[in-house]
Each structure stands twice: as C-alpha cells, then as structure tokens.
Image (cartoon, rainbow, N blue to C red; front, top):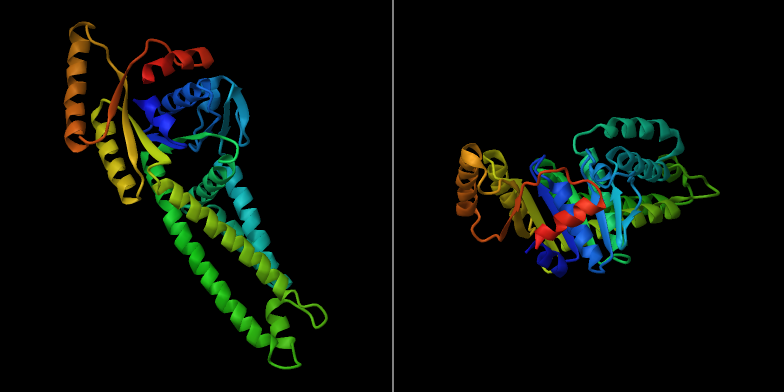
Length: 329
C-alpha cells in the first residue's frame, strides 16, 4: 500500500511523533523506489538527524550518493539560518544608507534567535530543494521533525507568502516615494541623504531592482511550494505512529492540522506492532495496541493504514533497509 502511494507521487512527507520510526520507514520507502529505477532524493528536515546513523555514513547539507538512484541530504538548521540571515543582511545593506550598517548588523544578530527563525529558514530551504530537485529527481522523500514542529513548518508557506507580499507592497510604496524625492527639482540632497546616494551616482534604481528581484523570488518560491503541498496528485503526507495512546492522539491532531493547511494525508503507517503468539504478557500488550488502534480507526476511518511488525534487530545499513522495505507492500 505504501509503495503504491510512493509510485503515484513525486513528493512524499513522512511525519509523526518522535521515536516512532519515521526515518526508517521513509528511508526504506526511498530505497525501494530507487531499486525500481526512480531517481530519489531523501531529505531530513529533523534537527536531530538520524539518516547518517541509519545508513552508517556521513550525510550533510548537500546531496550525497547513498545507493543506486538514491541520494540523501540533511538540512542543517544552524547553517540554513546563517545563510538565510547573510542573504537578508546583504539585501538590507544594499537598501539602507552606508552609515546605517551598524544598525543592520544589530538587527540581524537580534533576529538570529528569534522564535520561528529556524522554521522560516528551513522552510525556505525546503522550497528551494523542491524547486531545484524536481529537475533532477523523480521522487522527493522528506523525513520531517516530530509532529508539532512539522505542523508549524507545513503552515509556514501560507504565512511566508503573505509576509513577502506585504514587503513587496511596502517596497512599491517606497519606490513611489523615492521617485517623488528624486523629482523635487535640481536639489537631490534630500533623497541622497535618506537613501545614501550621491549627486554624481544615484544607486537607487539598482538597489530597488535587486530588492525587487529578491522579494519576487521568495514570493514565487513560497507560492510554488504552497501549490505543491496542496496538489494531492503530486504530494502526499504519510503519518507514522506506534500503537500507543499518545502517538494515536497526536496522529489524530496532526491529521487535523494538515487538513487545515490543505495537505493531503495519504496513509497511516503503524510501526513496531507486536506479532501474534508471544505469550500472555505480549498477548495482553497486543490487546492494548488494538484498543488504541480502535480509537484511531474511529477518528480517521477514511485513511488507509499499514501495520508494520516490530523487528528483532536494529534496522541499520542498506541490506537491513532492503529487507525492511519488503514489508512495506
């Protein structure tokens, strides 16, 4: 069931409560699709990266080859924030007068640890990956952070698009205002004092053009990501959970949050299920699992579900992943 879903999509997001096996399930799905001949990029957006541990090798912020037809990368939140702020700082310096450079630096440093900064930077990086990787890969598989972080991340494109639209509108007003200043007559000192130009060389047109290009690029990128997330024919979200009370309740909550964001949930993967016939204690434990899964079925009866049995050994390395992938059908 899961592999059928993967065959029909070009973008898959895997999410759910921490510790339920999202990385293992997403990696096994990516590997299975790669073995079928599709070019696959597996991307971790979780700050606590596990892809490197799973494949028993170093994986960084740029794609590395993990297997035939399969590349992987881990988005580093700190590096992403640094790159994001460097670009913002550069843009602000081009906009502001040179004597205000110190204020720009102060603002950037204060922004570094602002609430939501990492999520915003990671979302812009995801948008960039979706935009660029579509040219090189047939399938993008995202291994996301635990549910609460992911829900906020998925909602960001809408908010970031609106925020960027607001910036563009303010820039257009500023452009009209600066045009008035430049036409006040032969005396250009007012406009030059505000915008840092000189009588001989007015850089306003160049600055405004660069700012406009940056903002329009961000608007297009977030708009494209928002479109991709809402395209059920192209994108699907898979929720991975364990047959336990808290993961079940969190899954129901996450499904509602994703629906409100316009993201289609394609499947539920119940991981680490206990097999039958393991004695009285484990039989009771499996009965407890059935109680929690009944709650899940009552709340989300329309979503297809796949149960994966708990395996005896850790899933590490390509061979173990290939064996695990055979259970996904």
